[in-house]
Image (cartoon, rainbow, N blue to C red):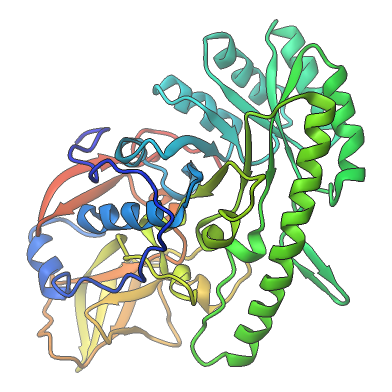
Length: 421
């Protein structure tokens, strides 16, 4: 077991060429994984290093001239974060999801850590201040004067100057619809001005960057099977949002630089919006996380498809009827609005499916399958989580497969004894 994976994807730089759509590698079928996982106690989480490396190359191809910041919440493994960062100089820095996670990652040797969400608790902010005093560069996220003054107070106590990132809201609001997520209250440059002016007056904090996350573009699928009307509406809303978001982000960046001086970075986008976010001249970096593992929710995008590089295996322990295989465990649902798309999905063998009444259960998961594979007690059923990083909250290790064999087993955050949310 290690905290570093050897043999990362061949170092490269991004190009302006659009990466081709990825299709499932034909050799990585059920038989391939069943042979590789033979004898490994289930349930367990797995990571296909060959497919991870292909996803890395595809993401580099989609980044254009922008740097890529890794979203740690979508990876949640120190070893995997290091492997991705080592693959190319285009990958720079991490976006963290809590202050204590950022401080811990700094203790593991990572630098250029951007908080993706505000922190308020003074003890959490103090952990960042102590890491800063020890030489780490952790940038706090703010979207209000109150956030700035809280960070300022803690920075003063610890005799450090804390860098801040101002988050601007990228939501598209149309009559009867809030198309986006509830994040920052700063919808435009006028609303951002008082916060920027407060930062500019402080000797204990400084403005490091601007972030605008267009979640409604990056994180909403637009190619769901059998939902033509919904897909069409989402695409139209995305198109309108993309235009307005670019204007809004550019206006706030111009104001910020006039009040606070040059910015170190301007962050935007996500896995699902790389092709459009990279076209904005104001943006210097794009945050990407889910694309590396490519969970099930990311199957529903029209413009791209990455390889399903991570998942988990559950063991057949009962065969209650012909074509029904009941597995131990498996009920790992994703966060977000409750719906079928938050359930795990059966990946392999191809054609297998969950039972519509039982679904994926805490202690047992029945699978329906009548395909060509001959399944028996003790065989694995391969599942995919709906979201990326939440898979690692369920398991302490990732079994890493390469060229058809398990070559390593690395810890997740949970395996390192860490639980941040």
